[in-house]
Image 1 (cartoon, rainbow, N blue to C red):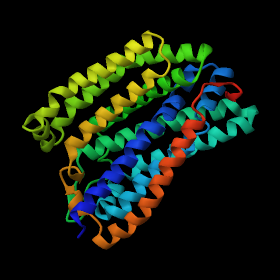
Image 2: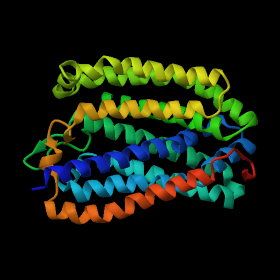
Image 3: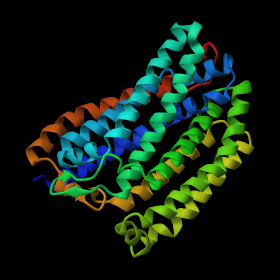
Image 4: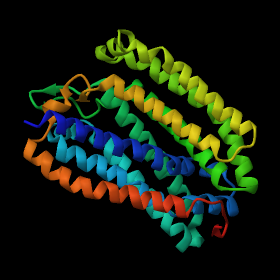
Length: 334
């Protein structure tokens, strides 16, 4: 049995890792999905150069989230993995294709169009798989005893597909705002145009997922529409609308940096809503973080290592973003 305080600390660590992955890797997955909209040559090269120094480091947070789940909440890992094998494998394969394409498009220019397609396809598959995984988890996993008791295709539902589509649109908004912030010329102009198109679509998809979520699990409805959940339910739509308006306004006003940070705010608000819906469960409606926690001794042992590694990850991530904080062109960062 895990220590309750340490269990909450580990839940916070894993949630931080997942949130960091979503906001950091989200924009470069979004850029990959935007690739067909970019002109072959200078625009695509600039887009790749803008994420080249940080894209692989961003995925460190995915490793932290997945590895931390196994170590800190082994029961949840043992239930979630067999339930979501298919979308998780699809996500990993998409990331592999995307990573290989990123490197080989520079080293094999004769086949660059194929590598560009692999970069787009890998980004799309990985994003859809992430959204579908989230949707399937929210919808509930069938458990018997301490093991998954559902079928191979239980993850594939209209709600999970809606979550996949919503995440794909939101990542593209984040990616286009990144390009507005980091590039100039025709690429920045195109990214700004695409971002303005994506703003209302993102808002619609957030609204659709938000309206559907309370009806896929009874506890979500009670969390959002009974006190004290109402204290968040009432202002949350206003906050979402306000942040969306700020993205639109700053894109229209010609700002370079503000739209990206407002888009990050939109993601963070969505994650706050998600946390309110499922807390304190790690498998919503089935297993709480306290039921799934590793023994206290294991929690302490892992926390010592995490206490060293996580600050190091934060430090080199912050350093990389600071060093490459300027604008980029076809030759790289200024």
